[in-house]
Image (tube, rainbow, N blue to C red; front, side, top):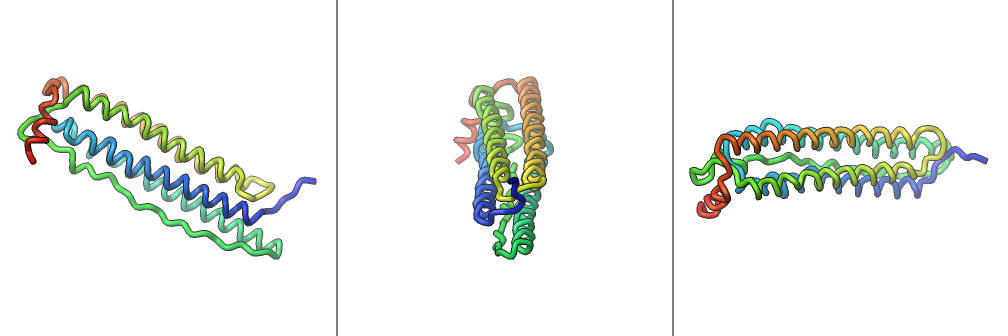
Length: 214
């Protein structure tokens, strides 16, 4: 016989998995994007094109993804808690809602400068290596969202569309991240090419100037 109902222990386990996936997502979008990409580029690319890309394209896009992710995960956990309480009331059982704390993160692009020690340009080889980090960071973000979708697929609510609705809402942000990171990759390549055309490849001089400033 097909049952309709809920299992509070499975709901709690599912929410814990969702929260763990969320932390991994913010690690990718907030921490890794900052340390591996922005900070990684700070001593390899310095000019107006670099500042324009990071300040006008990269930062708004990633900050928006983090804000959207916070809202969706907060909504998912709230929905699971609400459904758990509703099922508990209907079945004369108990369910204790779990808390969710959004992680406030914004990208700091102040490390990207117009010049370093008077040098404007790009260390093309090193900058390209850093830019390639975008793919693996985006993959980590999407992997975290896949984990969250898997967690809610077995969320303890049996019957109806409860799980599929949660999966779909997570799919929305997954698509946003996919589209945004692809656009950012394209924009970074364009800005890098423009820098090479304007200043040529400085062959490490930007990095050397950065080191000598200390």
